[in-house]
Image (cartoon, rainbow, N blue to C red; front, side):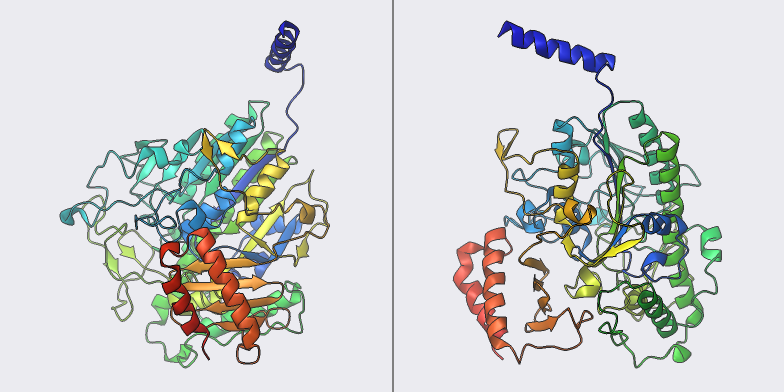
Amino acid sequence: MAATRLFIACVMICIAAGLLGADERPNILLVLVDDMGYSDLGCYGGEIDTPQIDSLAANGLRFSGFYNTGRCCPTRASLLTGLYPHQTGVGKMTFEENRPGYRGFLQPNCVTIAEVLREAGYQTSMVGKWHLSQTRMGPRHMRNLNNQVLLKQFSDPETYPVGRGFDSHYGIIWGVVNHFDPFTLVRDTTPVQNVEPDYYTTDAFTDEAVAKIHEHAESDSPFFLYVAYTAPHWPLHAREEDIARYRDTYSDGWQSIREARYQKQLEMGLFKNRSDIRLSPRHDASVAWTDEPKKEWEMRAMAVHAAMIDRIDQGVGKLVDALRATDKFDNTLILFLSDNGASPERPAAPGFDRYNQTRRGESVTYFGTGMPREVLPGNELTCAGIGPRWANVANTPFRYWKGDQHEGGIRTPLIVHWPTGLATNPGSITHQDGHVMDLAATCLDAAEARYPKIYQKRAITPLEGKSLLPILRGKPREGHKQLFFEHYGHKAVREGDLKMVAGEKGPWELYDLSTDPTELHNLADKQPNVIRRLAADWQGWAERTGVVDTKNAKKNAEAQKKLTRR
């Protein structure tokens, strides 16, 4: 026993003295953007200038069929824990519904990547949007919160990132922000009450992440850095110099941009069977661009969206420069993706986490459906979104958008870059599927860390995600037999090339994605037995993971039968 203690003491002394050398496990940089469409990046078909991200793709690996959960907070919950979002308690949004799958914050039955990696000796830090603590509403007179109201807490600090495995966090706790003056901005658990006059969230998050890279580089221990940009989530806010570069880019309108993106996707071989990929019909196709009465406003809205992504790209370039400057670039696994498809939302009024005034007391103009578009969006006096027509462009070639479980809502670009660990040819595109819950398994696998059965005396739900490392090593991966989805009643199941999907109250639809990846030819009437089988599988999954209340399983089953009746 004494000899064992002596050996351990010697090892610790050697580590402290640096005699055992640096830890050779990879650093991990996970970059998540917010509400970016499938085709917005240049390397996925877009016209937006994204040379830094495109360079990572040109020297790394792109996934053509990677899935998120369709909305901000469930995707973040799934990504960080390796579970379906309902298993973590964040099946919908960040408010309490007193049901296991809908508690609005991460539950004790799950662990985050940061918690596991910190136990394994990693430095852990987060920058940006958390959106996994309850969004607590104040009294009626505080419903329109902004920086004139100073709160000591935005939720329970134990549910903040620093309560879930991150050594540090600089960013926002809730979901929506004024990008020039964000509410719910914190450093660790302390609210940041004032920002510089020239503040912009994307730049501030980039600067903080760069500083963290330099700080982490001073240690021999590897690091896990999670950078969650709030852009390009509405409100449409960008710096004027970025907007100016896209002033005339969208003058030809929705259909022209969408068709150009589609052709570029075909040329780059983004999809497995080029002959089978068809551009889905444009949303609201009866409305022609030539008849749009507010062209200048619509052009400006999409220009701001592009400018927000452009600024993210500039930030990614700075992160790469920091990795190179600290000699960490080659051994850093970089993962870049979006949390859901582009958003069709155009918020109509303040409330919840939408601000009603600036810090100086100036009123904010909103642009909901049917509301006047007399003021151009872009600065903090406006709160606008790109709307369904531009969202349909951003998600080319798919139908629908954020919140929906069709491909436009849940398919995300994923770029992987890792010079010392990636065995695929530079610029390769893989058509093997994956899900955001696979990223936790991948990070732990790359870090040689073990997913726990027990964490801090808490029983942990078994990991659902599957590591992507075989794909990164250029090999076939035994993926998920089935993947399931649900959000606000929208639902889907993917089994091989078959995908069954339903809207909030609609019947099940069935598609063969091997020949119909844009979901144009519904096979439900031709294959009722498949519909019944997959519907039963979905129901079993829903009851297992907390999507539905098992106490009311009989009632749920009856509702399911109604959906499958043709």
